[in-house]
Each structure stands twice: as C-alpha cells, then as structure tokens.
Length: 481
Ligand code: 5AD
Ligand code: SF4
Image (cartoon, rainbow, N blue to C red; front, side, top):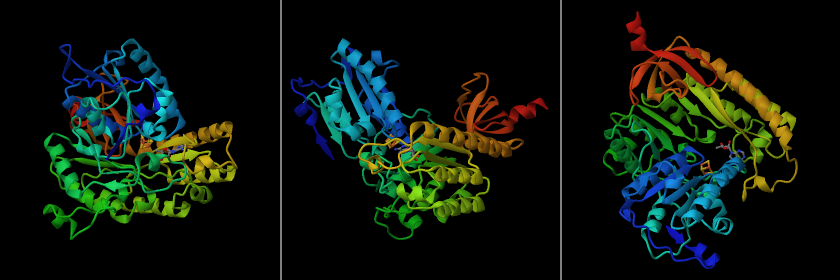
C-alpha cells in the first residue's frame, strides 16, 4: 500500500491540517455525510466507509450542511457520472467556505482517474483517494502528520473493513478487485488495477459471519466476478481443502458451491460477469445450487463481431449466442439481463442492426443501455475515425430501448399466474400501503401483504410490466378465500 501526499506539494500555502478528534469536538459528536455515485462496487465500498467512520466515532448526518466530514464516492464510467458529481461538489465548496474546518473528501474511480488534478481543479478538497483506499481515509482522519491535502492510491480490500449495511438482511461480498480485461472503452482497469482475488477461506468465513448476523441474500462483487480465483494458488480438492482451511484458490463455480452450503444464506447473486468466463460449471451452479438465483447478467455491449473486436471483448456474436443457448438449456427459466453500448466509434447502421437482431433473438428481461462516451486514457478515446454523432446515438438508443422494453414486457408475462418467492425489502415506493420486494429472478414486485422487511414470502403474481410485477401475498389471498 502506498500513500502519496502530493497534493500539498502542488498547492502552495496550505495549512497543516490538525487531525479531527473523531469522538468529540467541543463536546459534540462529529458527523459525516457520504454521497455515492456509480456501481454496486461503489455502494459496497460506501457501506464499508460508513462502517469504518462509525467505528471511529463519527455519526451519519442527514444533510451535507450538518456534516463535519463531507465525502463523495465517485464514478468515472461515463461522462454523465462525472458531471452529476461535479454539480454536487459545488455545494461542498460553499459549505467549506462557510466553515473552513470541515473536511471534504473525494474517493473512488473519478478521484483515481484524475489524481493530482483533484486538488488543482478543486482546491477546497482536503483528501482524495482511489477505490479501495477507504482504510487510508481512516489514517488521514486520525493522523496529524499529514498535510492538508493528501492523495492515496492502490488497493486494499474494502471487503475486510467493517460494514454498515443499508438493509440488515442483504450484504455485499467483495470477492475480487481490479480487472485483467482490456475492453477498449473502459476506464476500470486503470482505476481499479489488475485483478486480485480474496482467498477462499476468508470469503467463506465472511459469509458465515454474515449469515449469523441475519443476512439472507449476498451479492458477490467484482469487476469480473467469474474469473475469480485464477490469480490464487490452487491446491487439492476444493471442498476438502477449504474445509481444512488449507486451500487459497478455487474457481468461481467452486466458490458458489461452498457459499451455497452455508446455513441461513438463502440467495446468492453476483455481478458483474464476463461472457468469456461464463463456463458450463457456473451455469450449472444456477441449476443445481438452491441458493444461486435464476438470474444471469451477460453483458453484450454490441453484437457486431467487428465492433466487438474493436472493443476487445474477446468473443464474437456466435460465441455469445452459444453462451445464451447454454444458459437456456440448463436454466430455461433464468432471467437474462445485459449491458449495451450504442455509438461506439466506427459503429455503422449495419453494425447497429446486428445488435438489434440479437436483442430481438435473445429477448432480455432487462438491459442497461449506454451511449458511448470517451474516457480518458482508454484506447477507444484515441479513435478519431468513424465517430458517431450525438443525434445518431440518440436515435439508435431510442430504437434499442423500444425493443428492449417490448422484449422485457413479453418475457415478464411468463410470471403472471405463478407464485414466486419474494424477499421483502420494505414499503412500495409508489404506494406505502403495499410492499415491495424482489424475486429470485431479480424482478421488483409490488404487492399487497403483511410480511416484514427481510422476510421471504410467497406472492401470487397478478400483472407484469417491462419493469415490475404486481401481486398479492399468498397468505393474504388464502385468508380472503
Ligand atoms: N461509454 C459508454 N458506456 C460504457 N460502459 C463502460 N464504459 C463505457 C463508456 N466509455 C458501460 C458498459 C459496462 C457498463 C458498466 O457501463 O456497458 O458494461
Ligand atoms: Fe464507476 Fe466502474 Fe468505478 Fe464502478 S468500477 S464506480 S462503474 S468506474
């Protein structure tokens, strides 16, 4: 691990920052406010940040204006994420001007991608740190040896820090960090570094402890989850050796098998996998292991083999479709979701039509769709030929969305009339008299019922749109008969 305090060298005249005494300042508990942008890995890191801050004696403030420590966990995957965050940063500047003793911290992928520029562009920021450097933030807050501005980089596993879970019955498990792929559009390899997996025994112990704590659903996180374990030394038969605590490594499918054996863990999800690593053993785990949910995210990005090559995705349309066929063969009812980028440099009308063809053929249960945006330091950002103009991207996006929604609506009808197990998350967002939960297929269900948050209950599905299902809790339906 390395701490680089270059900020102080670049910005002249900064005072040395006295350490905040976490518990009290003028007999008052210090408070933090944290805003999270980006993906589930960032949400996980934020939970760890909160856990870490609370173990240092900080309490969470409802509003930024009430906080002694204003933190942002940033994302840099697309331009929109950058600009949303910068708008929020304006408020932090104003608050810092009002009370200069406040500490403003910026963590995560955006901070990593601009590094020293953070302090040049935003001199009111005190501390910046890359993803995974949450532990360094603790050092910064409690040390008085650092100057006012510090930038920290390189990985520690945030998964090893205490968490403060948003919902006590759902937990994230960071199984690896970094990514060894070289997708030409993606900033992640430069912000999160090479892939490093956490040892198997450590993960099993973490999930066991979560189960004891009341967690029912775990989501395994990594930039490329299903290449888990390739960097770890492997040993004898995984079950035997892991039980004896001797083996460090295992394949992703073996990890799923071991976690499935943990009492109390009812559901296992994971994100994000890469189609190239979606092997038969992983797909079979969905069919064979009771807790592994019937939902697979299979990021397509494009289905023009020419564009896939330029994206360096290492599969072509035919190989992707083979993966889909394998999933449908072993887990016919699984829901499938995907990520698609429109307007990658060089994407012609014909290339885009190919993407539409695959979307029509697969019929996804949901899709995340993105307009290509060049990210600094990536190979695709250097491409100057065949750039797709914004209005064309917008048109393509509209056509794609229409097709995705039509497909999702169609697929969702298979649930109507069935009774599905739902993990209750709380009241419905649109109608507080109803409940909201999620099926194993990762569909949101709004339903009439009496169950409490964190319970698993059976819900009869009465209607379905492209996004959500509607229903009635089984017990309630029976009582009415
Ligand atoms: N432009 C647009 N979309 C992108 N994604 C990643 N990088 C870019 C980019 N430069 C999308 C991909 C990825 C998802 C998380 O974000 O579809 O799977
Ligand atoms: Fe955004 Fe990617 Fe970083 Fe997640 S890993 S916060 S998506 S840049």
